[in-house]
Amino acid sequence: MKKIIVIAVFLIAVPFLTSAQKTAKFGHVDFAKLYGMMPGQDSIKTVYENYAKGISDQFAAMQAELDNKVQDYRANQGTMSDIIRQTKEREIQDLSKRIDDFQTQAQQNLQQKESDLTAPMIEKARKAVETIAKENGYTYVFNSAEGLLLYAEPSDDLLPVVKKKLGIQ
Image 1: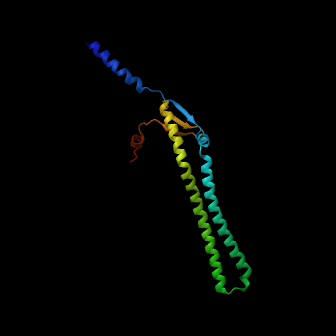
Image 2: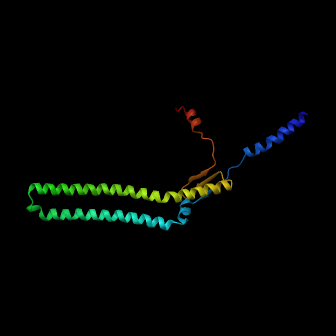
């Protein structure tokens, strides 16, 4: 009877022991190359370039206005009264500051627009990598171009244990 119980426990435990010893399976993807191959790049590029051109055109108009004000100021500086000269100088300074602010804001807007346009495609590629990894039993998938981890099986977060070991609250 004891032997039957031992054999039954053994037969029940074997599948659990073998699944606990699953070997890690690694893979890699050049994510930048994958992203570059995805359809829709042309439309993203066109939308971004049109957006950038609008900003560039506005900047050029502002710069032309500044150039005209500076030329007018230089040409008429000798004949201006002090109050008109000071007013023109303030106008030039204000416009120059607005142009600087516009450049800063335009750079931020361009970065945000690029992010808004590319984020859905990047997410689609990331999900495809995750799906393939799960379907094929990969434990980890790395970005071969940058050495970053693209996918990992859910696992235990060791941060709390390591923090405790190091005495970090």
